[in-house]
Structure formats: structure tokens, C-alpha cells
Amino acid sequence: MALFLLGVMLPAPALAGPPTSLKVRQYLAAHPGGTVLNHNEISYQGGEVVVTLDAPVGTYGMADCPSGWFCFYEWPNYGYPRGKLSSCGWQNLSTWSWQFRVESAHYNLGSGHVGFYYHDQELFRVNPSKRVLADAGQWRNWANRVYRSCP
Image (tube, rainbow, N blue to C red; front, side, top):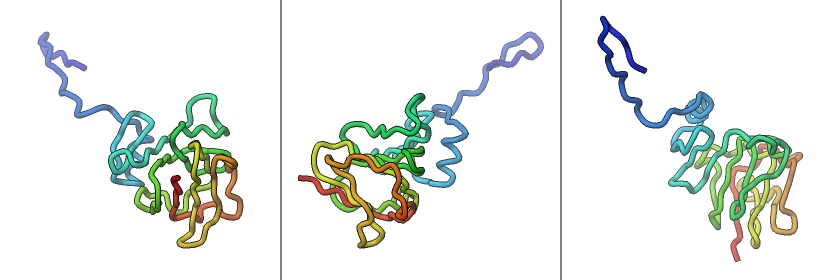
């Protein structure tokens, strides 16, 4: 945007970095430490986990985890925000402020499994033969760790 002052056009100040949506700013305020990827995605720890804030148009209520990832959703029936991970072994969900927030899950990998845990107790798991869990039921908002078994 330029400013006209007495017939002289003054340049507008340069924007600092890409613009971010209000929703992204609010999410980062509540869950600091992320890097903005675009108007709808934030990565943590160099892309180890990627949070997508809003579902793509036409996918509400559908498991939509990209191939090569396992995903967890803040609401039943795959309600966004969605977190996605692909790392093997133990992951502490508090690293990305996802502890006690998982209500549904989708496993989109060809082998292995991921268990969702409350400390050392496995609550539920998803794997190639049971890829989706639309509602964690009694275990909603209990998981604070995950373990992905990789063959």
C-alpha cells in the first residue's frame, strides 16, 4: 500500500515475512515453538510433526491422513486440528502440546502400528488392519504418548 502526500507517492513499509492468519497466530500463542509453513500448517521440531488447522474443503468427518504418516485429531470423526507424525519409537505428545487432546486417529502406513498411551498404559492402537478410529470413546483426551512400531 502506498501513501500519497502532497502529490508525492511514498512507499509502504515492507512486510516482515509471509502473512499469517489469525487462526495460526492464535494457535501459536496457545502452543508455542512452531514454524509457520503456510496459512493453515505449522511444523514443530523441523517438521517432525506437522499440525494442520483446518480440513480441506469437502473432507470434514473423513480420515484424511497423507500416505506415509499417522495422524491424530483433536475431535471425534477426524475433526481438526490434525497432527501428523511418521517417526518410529516413543514420542511424548507434550513436546508439541498434543497431550490429552487426541480424540480420533488414522494410520496411513503399510506396516507396523502406533499405540496411544497414558504413561505406560496402552489405550488404543491403529495399524494397517485397523487404520481408522473415528472416536477414542472413553479414552478421549487421555493419550500423552505414542509408540510407533516400525518393522
